[in-house]
Image 1: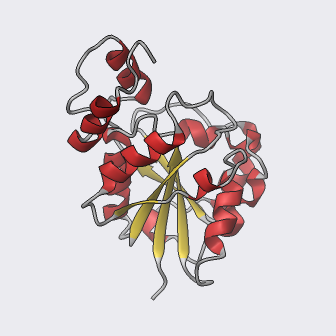
Image 2: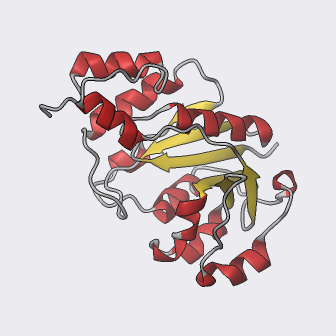
Length: 214
Protein backbone atom coordinates (compact mmCIF):
# COMPACT_ATOMS: atom_id res chain seq x y z
CA UNK A 1 0.00 0.00 0.00
CA UNK A 2 1.09 3.57 -0.64
CA UNK A 3 2.59 5.36 2.33
CA UNK A 4 0.93 8.54 3.63
CA UNK A 5 3.46 10.94 5.12
CA UNK A 6 2.90 14.39 6.58
CA UNK A 7 5.60 17.07 6.60
CA UNK A 8 5.75 19.83 9.23
CA UNK A 9 8.69 22.20 9.01
CA UNK A 10 9.67 24.98 11.36
CA UNK A 11 12.45 26.48 13.38
CA UNK A 12 11.11 24.68 16.48
CA UNK A 13 12.83 27.30 18.65
CA UNK A 14 11.66 25.61 20.84
CA UNK A 15 9.23 22.89 19.75
CA UNK A 16 6.05 23.20 21.83
CA UNK A 17 2.68 21.59 22.43
CA UNK A 18 1.04 23.64 19.65
CA UNK A 19 3.32 22.08 17.03
CA UNK A 20 2.96 18.61 18.47
CA UNK A 21 -0.79 18.64 19.03
CA UNK A 22 -1.46 19.94 15.49
CA UNK A 23 0.81 17.29 13.98
CA UNK A 24 -0.80 14.50 15.99
CA UNK A 25 -4.36 15.62 15.22
CA UNK A 26 -3.63 15.75 11.49
CA UNK A 27 -1.91 12.37 11.58
CA UNK A 28 -4.91 10.75 13.24
CA UNK A 29 -7.58 12.52 11.19
CA UNK A 30 -5.81 11.88 7.86
CA UNK A 31 -4.84 8.30 8.75
CA UNK A 32 -1.20 9.09 8.05
CA UNK A 33 1.59 6.62 8.63
CA UNK A 34 3.64 9.40 10.20
CA UNK A 35 4.24 13.13 10.35
CA UNK A 36 7.87 14.16 10.01
CA UNK A 37 8.95 17.22 11.97
CA UNK A 38 11.75 18.88 9.99
CA UNK A 39 13.74 21.60 11.78
CA UNK A 40 14.85 24.42 9.48
CA UNK A 41 18.55 25.16 9.15
CA UNK A 42 18.41 28.73 7.85
CA UNK A 43 14.80 29.80 7.32
CA UNK A 44 14.67 32.26 4.39
CA UNK A 45 11.67 34.23 5.68
CA UNK A 46 12.52 34.63 9.36
CA UNK A 47 15.32 35.73 11.63
CA UNK A 48 17.93 33.19 12.66
CA UNK A 49 16.87 30.81 15.45
CA UNK A 50 17.99 31.82 18.93
CA UNK A 51 19.63 28.50 19.82
CA UNK A 52 21.84 26.15 17.81
CA UNK A 53 20.69 23.59 15.28
CA UNK A 54 22.00 20.84 17.56
CA UNK A 55 19.84 22.07 20.45
CA UNK A 56 16.72 22.43 18.32
CA UNK A 57 17.28 18.97 16.87
CA UNK A 58 17.71 17.47 20.33
CA UNK A 59 14.53 19.13 21.62
CA UNK A 60 12.44 17.77 18.74
CA UNK A 61 13.97 14.34 19.27
CA UNK A 62 13.00 14.49 22.95
CA UNK A 63 9.50 15.67 22.04
CA UNK A 64 8.67 12.84 19.63
CA UNK A 65 10.27 9.98 21.54
CA UNK A 66 7.61 7.38 22.24
CA UNK A 67 5.03 9.00 19.92
CA UNK A 68 4.63 6.49 17.12
CA UNK A 69 2.99 8.88 14.61
CA UNK A 70 5.60 11.62 14.94
CA UNK A 71 9.17 11.39 13.68
CA UNK A 72 12.19 13.68 13.55
CA UNK A 73 13.75 14.27 10.13
CA UNK A 74 17.04 16.17 10.16
CA UNK A 75 17.66 16.51 6.42
CA UNK A 76 17.48 20.31 6.34
CA UNK A 77 20.12 20.56 9.04
CA UNK A 78 22.41 18.38 6.92
CA UNK A 79 22.41 20.97 4.13
CA UNK A 80 24.56 24.08 4.51
CA UNK A 81 22.11 26.29 2.67
CA UNK A 82 18.78 28.06 3.22
CA UNK A 83 15.92 25.71 4.06
CA UNK A 84 13.74 25.73 0.95
CA UNK A 85 10.68 23.50 1.13
CA UNK A 86 10.96 22.57 -2.55
CA UNK A 87 14.42 21.09 -1.95
CA UNK A 88 13.11 19.09 1.00
CA UNK A 89 10.16 17.74 -0.98
CA UNK A 90 12.40 16.78 -3.90
CA UNK A 91 14.72 14.99 -1.51
CA UNK A 92 11.86 13.09 0.11
CA UNK A 93 10.36 12.17 -3.25
CA UNK A 94 13.67 10.60 -4.24
CA UNK A 95 13.33 8.17 -1.32
CA UNK A 96 9.69 7.18 -1.84
CA UNK A 97 7.69 5.07 -4.22
CA UNK A 98 5.90 6.89 -7.04
CA UNK A 99 2.46 6.38 -5.47
CA UNK A 100 3.40 7.33 -1.90
CA UNK A 101 1.52 10.42 -0.75
CA UNK A 102 3.16 13.48 0.79
CA UNK A 103 1.15 16.10 2.68
CA UNK A 104 2.80 19.45 3.40
CA UNK A 105 1.23 20.99 6.52
CA UNK A 106 1.03 24.78 6.50
CA UNK A 107 -0.69 27.28 8.75
CA UNK A 108 -2.94 29.83 7.04
CA UNK A 109 -0.42 32.65 7.32
CA UNK A 110 2.36 30.52 5.83
CA UNK A 111 0.07 29.41 3.03
CA UNK A 112 -0.83 33.02 2.18
CA UNK A 113 2.88 33.76 1.96
CA UNK A 114 3.57 31.02 -0.59
CA UNK A 115 4.06 33.41 -3.55
CA UNK A 116 7.26 34.64 -1.86
CA UNK A 117 8.68 31.11 -1.48
CA UNK A 118 11.47 29.74 -3.65
CA UNK A 119 9.97 27.82 -6.62
CA UNK A 120 6.64 27.72 -4.83
CA UNK A 121 4.71 26.80 -7.97
CA UNK A 122 6.49 23.42 -7.97
CA UNK A 123 5.47 22.33 -4.48
CA UNK A 124 2.30 20.61 -5.69
CA UNK A 125 4.30 18.50 -8.14
CA UNK A 126 5.62 16.60 -5.15
CA UNK A 127 2.95 16.81 -2.46
CA UNK A 128 -0.53 17.78 -1.46
CA UNK A 129 -0.90 20.86 0.76
CA UNK A 130 -2.98 20.71 3.93
CA UNK A 131 -3.79 24.18 5.22
CA UNK A 132 -4.40 24.27 8.96
CA UNK A 133 -6.93 27.03 9.46
CA UNK A 134 -8.71 28.31 12.53
CA UNK A 135 -12.52 28.41 12.45
CA UNK A 136 -12.38 32.16 13.22
CA UNK A 137 -9.98 33.00 10.39
CA UNK A 138 -11.62 35.59 8.18
CA UNK A 139 -8.79 36.78 5.93
CA UNK A 140 -8.80 36.05 2.21
CA UNK A 141 -6.03 34.40 0.25
CA UNK A 142 -3.85 36.78 -1.80
CA UNK A 143 -4.79 37.26 -5.42
CA UNK A 144 -1.72 35.31 -6.57
CA UNK A 145 -3.20 32.15 -5.00
CA UNK A 146 -6.85 32.47 -6.03
CA UNK A 147 -6.59 30.72 -9.39
CA UNK A 148 -4.55 27.95 -7.82
CA UNK A 149 -7.11 27.49 -5.07
CA UNK A 150 -9.95 27.42 -7.59
CA UNK A 151 -8.21 24.76 -9.67
CA UNK A 152 -6.68 22.56 -6.97
CA UNK A 153 -8.86 22.70 -3.85
CA UNK A 154 -10.60 19.54 -2.69
CA UNK A 155 -13.25 20.16 -0.03
CA UNK A 156 -12.75 16.85 1.81
CA UNK A 157 -9.14 16.29 2.95
CA UNK A 158 -9.76 12.55 3.06
CA UNK A 159 -10.59 12.61 -0.65
CA UNK A 160 -7.11 13.74 -1.76
CA UNK A 161 -5.87 11.28 -4.36
CA UNK A 162 -2.52 10.47 -5.88
CA UNK A 163 0.96 11.41 -4.68
CA UNK A 164 0.31 15.17 -4.72
CA UNK A 165 -1.14 18.10 -6.60
CA UNK A 166 -4.15 19.13 -4.52
CA UNK A 167 -4.99 21.50 -1.66
CA UNK A 168 -7.38 20.97 1.21
CA UNK A 169 -8.20 22.67 4.49
CA UNK A 170 -8.29 21.18 7.96
CA UNK A 171 -10.05 23.30 10.56
CA UNK A 172 -8.31 23.40 13.91
CA UNK A 173 -8.57 25.32 17.13
CA UNK A 174 -4.89 25.86 17.84
CA UNK A 175 -3.53 26.04 21.35
CA UNK A 176 -2.74 29.61 22.33
CA UNK A 177 0.99 29.06 22.62
CA UNK A 178 3.93 30.30 20.56
CA UNK A 179 7.70 29.87 20.58
CA UNK A 180 8.04 33.67 20.93
CA UNK A 181 5.93 33.58 24.10
CA UNK A 182 7.95 30.67 25.50
CA UNK A 183 11.29 32.39 24.84
CA UNK A 184 10.04 35.57 26.49
CA UNK A 185 8.88 33.72 29.59
CA UNK A 186 12.17 31.88 29.92
CA UNK A 187 14.14 35.10 29.48
CA UNK A 188 12.23 36.51 32.47
CA UNK A 189 12.85 33.40 34.54
CA UNK A 190 9.23 32.27 34.37
CA UNK A 191 7.98 28.71 34.11
CA UNK A 192 6.96 27.22 30.75
CA UNK A 193 5.76 23.95 32.19
CA UNK A 194 2.79 22.52 30.26
CA UNK A 195 3.68 24.69 27.23
CA UNK A 196 6.40 22.27 26.16
CA UNK A 197 6.73 18.54 26.83
CA UNK A 198 8.43 17.71 30.13
CA UNK A 199 11.40 16.17 28.30
CA UNK A 200 11.90 19.38 26.30
CA UNK A 201 11.67 21.48 29.46
CA UNK A 202 14.26 19.25 31.12
CA UNK A 203 16.59 19.77 28.14
CA UNK A 204 16.07 23.55 28.20
CA UNK A 205 16.86 23.67 31.92
CA UNK A 206 19.84 21.34 31.68
CA UNK A 207 21.44 23.46 28.94
CA UNK A 208 20.37 26.88 30.20
CA UNK A 209 18.62 27.76 26.94
CA UNK A 210 16.75 31.02 26.34
CA UNK A 211 17.89 32.61 29.59
CA UNK A 212 18.45 36.36 29.66
CA UNK A 213 22.22 35.85 29.70
CA UNK A 214 22.15 34.02 26.31
